[in-house]
Image 1 (spheres, rainbow, N blue to C red):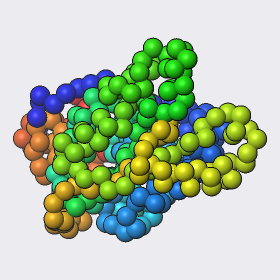
Image 2 (cartoon, protein in one colour):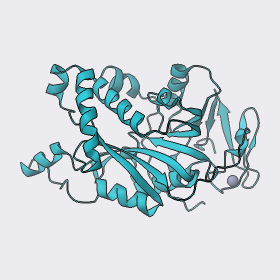
Image 3 (cartoon, rainbow, N blue to C red):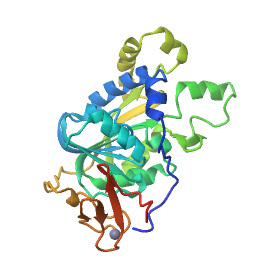
Length: 303
Ligand SMILES: [Zn+2]
């Protein structure tokens, strides 16, 4: 396990992202479009869902068909904001961890979501492999990624305002730790990992300041919702959502009520871990992690 990659992590610790980007940034249109796409793609019911890069919990209440949601983020401060937003509930478990080293046993989850997160992954296939490992056969994965082959980048490329080709398969890092991907590359990664993509929607077609200023967000999102279906044929929007299923007959994991059975050591792979009031311990490699403020913190900063 120790040979797992350690690509750089985009850390939102202490960030005012939730307020600055979503509340004050005029993103109501994008938020509404995402809600529509999620509703179309998410399974209606399920037991255990993993929300990867949950941030401040903007989407979490949209997963109400699931009995239990594990919110995972690298940033403790984002998870604290999520706790404040969602209130005290044993439906939610908060985990601070690196997506490249997920601390969960294989095949645990019925579903996982990853919205606006792959965007920050320097090694996207490695992150997707981790997600695949914690899903059981037949489980659902809802993935959003930023699409480099969008209309705006095609025009910019044609007008020579941009050097990189939107049609080339490699990802583009347009600013530090912000990546856009080619839809065919994402599809190839998922297929290689044993996912089958069932449905693809294109989202946020009208992410243009002028349109967003003159057309009310609800109406613009309504028009977007019609265009989302074109994603089944071709993807030229800045954001793409897809529903992928893990290939194979659905095999549900044994039902567990004890959280310690959910976790595995992110360093040596040992399971189960020992959980006390304030610590998590791996009895094999003797690493320990903190539990504080209701957050299971596997980042290992204190090692
Ligand atoms: Zn260990």
